[in-house]
Length: 311
Image (cartoon, rainbow, N blue to C red; front, side, top):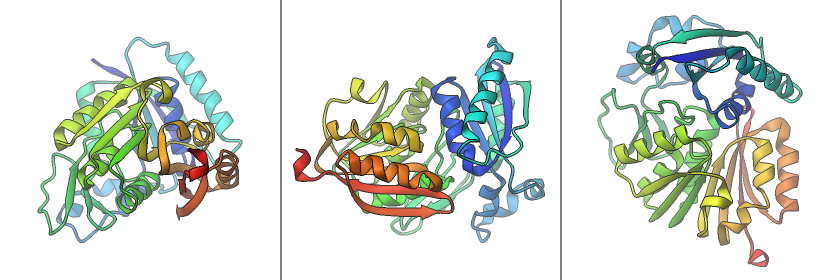
């Protein structure tokens, strides 16, 4: 099937919010082309020499978000919706040029194009993320995760995902719930680290499809299911992780308590630093104890706990 590709020029700060809107509200696929992801890679690795040099000769402040939809949508309507959402996001974040273009693109071309932006990289002490088409020689204690994101968000290159991976490594529990699982990367990390039960939840059917494919590739004991949080999750988990956006974290603050075990840990990420106070206030208001806040560039991840009083 061919796709309609809607290309949006924006800034790093707006990527999470825009991507969430496209995947959750418009049910589109996402490709994020951030040139800073290329220059942040380890230049000592052999594969770094294979990167297209044209990728380094671009404006590093411009991030391209490419939205994919099945051919046959009302393109003008979808562009209008995206423009309106960008206007809304611009009240809180720098959205950049807002330039939008539309092309029709064969599926085969799309599947090859994003590979240029995705390479082997390490997160934390032990986690190594690699795409299937690149060879990697495993080192001692490496936990290698093979991740082909396809049309779902979350490959580990973005600060929010990287912070979550490190925090999952630090706070691993036996039972884990990944809310907004996307590509499934955070749940797969938990399963690889030794969690005995891992559930991924996402409202986007494409994300669930890709997540289950990645689960199979990595041969881990995890399941990804489609639906809203409380509609599909009944058991309580000891660790909950959600890499979404600030507004959704705020909405989830009272709801997550119903799916987390007493004394459990919630890792909430995808939070732009300008929304820090809003999110912290919502968490405290909902009875969460703030354990730790970590920050990379303009992004935050918050570790909070549920105390005995919430039982």
